Length: 203
Image (cartoon, rainbow, N blue to C red; front, side, top):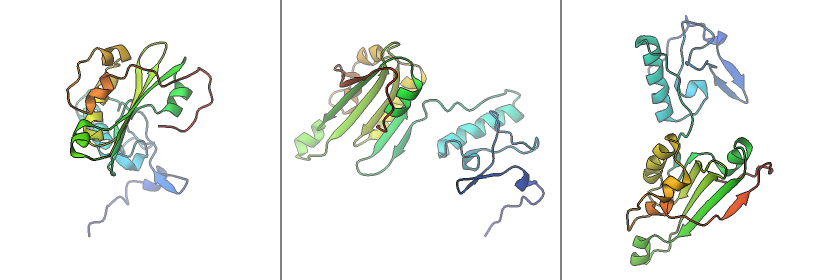
């Protein structure tokens, strides 16, 4: 068994215990309160996902060894739960959108039986949601529960990272027959959440 060797790192001087967790606080460049110690990944308790740790490590390398000060960007980080059916989310969920966005929030949803399920006789449905800022038309978040959710959401994540608007989603030609095309064909607002509303926990 390999044991980490950090007896000379003054480890106890930089860790924080909170709600049963132990982690190392860092600044925006991943440096701890001890100048010679940097930390990335789950030990910092930021977003505990492997691809996020990879991003943090890349930024650390550029900052320390490449002479290019780089900060990890935690906006629009996609994530997925690989259950059956899988669930995937990118951007803000409704609760976060109401708290953070200015103006009304538009919710677009679609629940359907994918064509391949219809042909095969399967009854498994897919649910999709887009969250849009009514004032700017910017897509703030997207959720999906259904087969291939993670694969589809990776592409949606790129669109959100680029600041895509609902109009740009609407002007995109879909791939037929596919479940993903539903994200570019949702035209009817399911509900509008007025600015200043009390947030509710809802994907």
